[in-house]
Image (cartoon, rainbow, N blue to C red; front, side, top):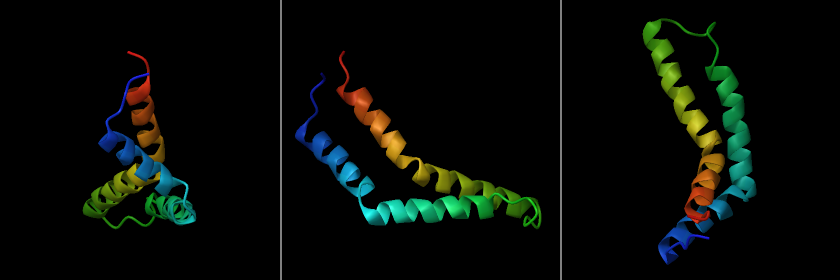
Length: 81
């Protein structure tokens, strides 16, 4: 297994602690609801609003999927060479 530096271990452990908190789970659930609301074409007023919503969706998806991204990065960093 590849060895992480102390700083890298702390980096990943801080994220894993956060992901296991009730507050994180609550935030992600609220963002999932927001994803549905923001992803509505019916509510789009014009092209500018559509691009704004697209940006919102990108940010919300990044946050909702952050735990999977960090987990994948951790696995990549610690797997055998």
